[in-house]
Image (cartoon, rainbow, N blue to C red; front, top):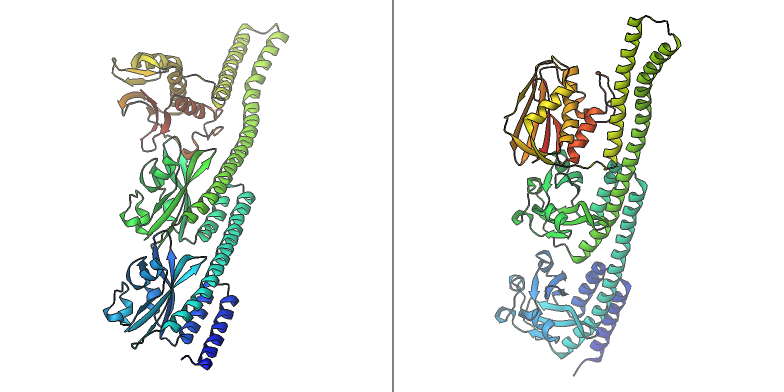
Length: 551
């Protein structure tokens, strides 16, 4: 017969436990208080809670007293197997009078010397959410009263756990939204790209609770991703990492425009050796999309193995959407600043360059018209001066027209078969003053498919520069390689100064040689309009430029 006083004491303790369950909203605090009081109410030595991981259909040790190793080692028990697995699968209490000779999956139970166990399901609206069990270090015959009491405890604990989980989800959602808003605020605050990324990446790393964060932007011309900014993995930017589109971790993300998770970097297909050098174990990357077009990749990484969840993917995609728009906005801002600067430079340089020959032409013609008594020799000299400056004016106007057409992309490129040596001889004759030594090292039968106008526009500029600023002889050579024709123009002069090399193709960059500063930029723009490029060879002894166009 049950002792009424003992029943009353148990009910008092149960009420205390219920008060505890209702007092805590934080799950960790709740479980710590619940387990200690449950162990006391059941006069047990150990007490543990395992919660259901629905995605893997496993019970995961979440909290324990007297059996802390379960949590420390991250014990997982498949539903349906072993002691706790049977409790969850059957949703009924299970008693093990003798643990040493029972079916238990968790080896820690025997390691700790537990002799008897009682486990009950944690149910919320008849749905299993986990298991609560108590154990003793001495053999004990748990009776129906123990089962009933522990089930009452479990029912109250299950409701409290469900409430705490909802609170945690709400709080985590609120914190993520606040952090997401911080990213949005940063994205709206900064217009300069470098400042923007420097502000965004640390916040993104914090939001995803990661160790590293990096942005790679797409170089469309070379179909490569270029490391643009990083925190925790700054070496990506310092070493100028480039990843081919479609290859490796980041390359697949950009090509497929889909998120990619690497649970184990050490055994994954990654091209960037820095990822392993830095000891990164797990990664999550998402594409940066603007109007459904990939402009780059945003990825985060951890130094410990981590299973990124669908929530992590969704959050990083939300972040990436804001980052992509901010990057595009910063790029547009940079382009507008550059355009404004180009306009100012254009007005200043064009007006200066046009004024000089126009003034000379006008002055010479005004003198000829106003003074009819001039000597023939003087008249001839003025006419030659006017003609020379008029020709200079013509060439400058042609350059400005070329620039306008190239900027508006209205120049049509019409490749056709040409005998290269013959065409080069014609261009040399028209571009280089008579008597200037020029050697053409091109086989007479070399035929290529290219636009003669583009070749003329580019090579005439290079030849003219070599004749004016270089030393003879001028050498023109050509070769076919990698399905491209490569035409080089070189001389034996001093070449482009080291300080000017990085800016030699910038508009209005004239250096010490004078001129309009438009010739080389226009020449390169023509080459690129043809699908090729114009490059300067800094390793040559003199000045050497190479025109590369597809054949």
